[in-house]
Length: 325
Image (cartoon, rainbow, N blue to C red; front, side, top):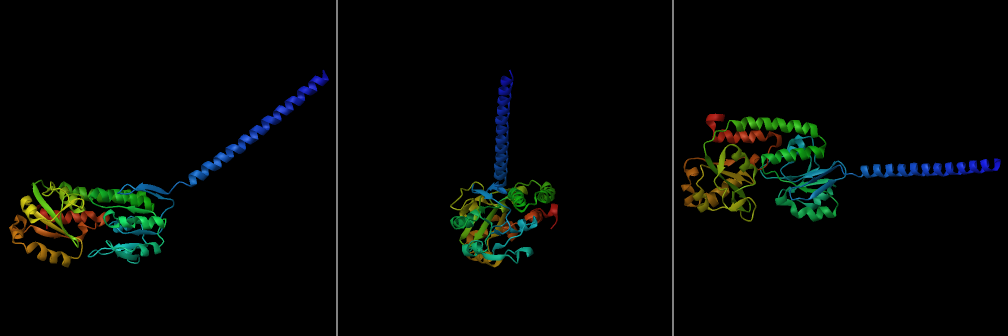
C-alpha cells in the first residue's frame, strides 16, 4: 500500500513539473510576441500620404530638412514649418522667414545637385515642373512629393497635409477655419450678374487661354462669374488651350484677365508684341470697354492663409459698388 502511495506521489510531482515547464515556456513565448509587436509598432512611419500624381509617400520620421519647390512655401511657413531649400519665382517675393534657405534655382530650372547637397528628408515639387527629378531623388533615397495648388480647396487640403508633416494639426485646423470664415463672408456678398470672363496666361513658352485647373479661375468663378472659355478643348498643357484671337473673339468675354508667369515688364512686353500687334485685339469687347486687366502674382503663387486678400482684390475690381474700390 505504501509502495503504491509513493508511486502516485512521484507521478504527481512529474506531472506538475511538466505543467510548470509548459507554463514557463508559454510565458517566454508571449513575452517574445509582445516584444515583436512593439518592434513592429516602432517601425510604423511617421506619416503616409499620396501626392497629386498618385505616388505613396512614406515618411519614416518627422521631416526636419524640407525643400519646397512649388507654390506652397508661404503656406508651409504660416503653419509653423521651416525649410532648408526653396525655388525662386520671377516677380514673387520670398517670405521673410525663408530668406536664409538655400535658393536651388528658378522653379522651372532647379538644380538637383543643390537639392541633394542639402541632405533633405523631404522634397516637395510641382507635377508640371519637377517630375524629372523623381529618378534622381529616388536614387538618393529622398522622399519626393509632387503637389499642386490649383484651387481654394487645394489650399485647405495642402494646409492640412502640411500641418501633419510639421506636427501642428490642431493649430492648422484653427487657422484654416479662420481663413475659410473670411472667404465665406466675401463670397456671400457677390451678386449674380451673369458676367463672363477669360484668363490669358503669359509664360516664357507662349500664351494660352485657361480652361480649367487654375487658382485664378477658381477664385473668379467663386465670385459668380462664368468662364467663357470653359467649353474649349484643352491642348497639350492640361487645363488650357493655345492662344487664338479667333477663339477669344468668339467667346466674347465681359472681362479679360491676364496672368503672367514672370515679371510684370515681361507680361507687358508680350502684350504689346504678341497681342496688341494684331488689329483684331482692339475689337474685343473687354478691351474696348476697359475691362482688360493684369492679375497680380498672388493669383499664381497664393498667399496661403491670406488668400482672402486675393478674393477681396478681385471682388473690388469687378463689383466696386458692392465691395468698394
